[in-house]
Image (cartoon, rainbow, N blue to C red; front, top):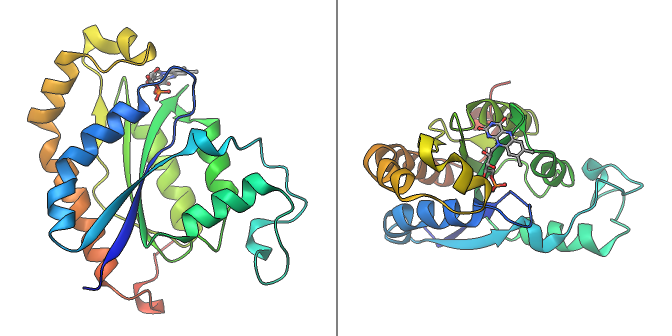
Length: 207
Ligand SMILES: Cc1cc2nc3c(=O)[nH]c(=O)nc-3n(C[C@H](O)[C@H](O)[C@H](O)COP(=O)(O)O)c2cc1C
């Protein structure tokens, strides 16, 4: 396979957050199997794009054929997402659902994402399973090809408050290493398989 680029995207945007540490944990597990298949991982941090709540006068589906983005923040996010062949979204769960910032960043674009493969890794007190399901629904509807395996990483009970304070506790790290490595590797394997498949109508995601 010609070399491919996968963006590992930290989707949480709080000032104090555990998201980058979760992304680093995931990267450590998938770096070797992906690089040995000629897939490079690019770290992308959503917070750096400083996206306001969607404020473009056009709909993302109109760009670039029928319209252009007005604002530099949209153009920068668009250029970043366009660069990659696939994605791993590392998402938190807030209030039993997808975080507003995560959904907003997804909503900003359409054609940059469409048809490409994506894996979803969620985390939270209950592993962020509800947010993962919601993001899967949104991305599938938008025409992305979602990897079947979606790891859900739960904080160990004593570490919930340290996560809120931006630190992944030792008990959680140990538990994830023991219990989530297989699932994270499987998600990377699914993504690799999807990257190999051409994006033909036959491979299009089922609604
Ligand atoms: C506004 C808010 C709502 C939250 N709601 C949930 C929730 O519904 N389920 C959950 O598992 N964790 C919830 N949490 C705890 C988060 O899982 C935890 O704070 C985690 O660190 C969030 O990821 P982040 O640090 O990358 O933002 C919530 C945290 C915040 C800040």
